Image 1 (cartoon, rainbow, N blue to C red):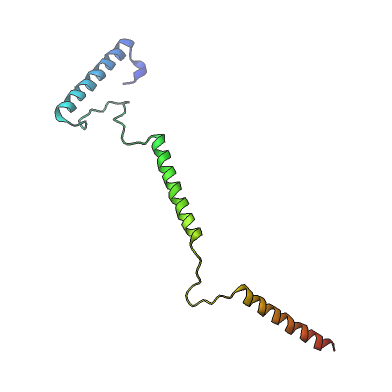
Image 2 (cartoon, helix red, strand yellow; image 1 turned 180 degrees about the horizontal axis):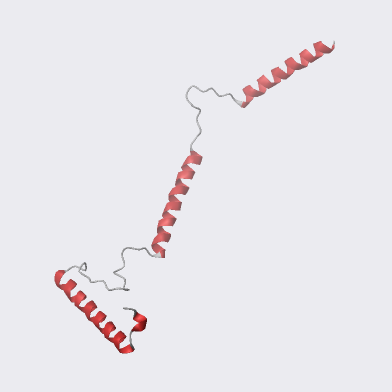
Length: 114
């Protein structure tokens, strides 16, 4: 049956019946202590399940951002240590090697020219 084909009186009667069903469902759930015994009507939604408010989502997002910020700060503060077995060289050591290599190349070029 299509709702557009119903008369105004029939629509009022259907609304009254739906209201009675809702009232009876409320009484039944009060007696049984449960709201699982609801009768679903066509075109009518059931009880809202779950969901979260915008404020709740904002709190969760802020907490997650704080956790990430804390993790990134801890990573930035962590001292980068060389891998085991890997040798590192100081800046002064690299400079000394560079100067020695330049001196060798200068000497070799001077000998080649003479």
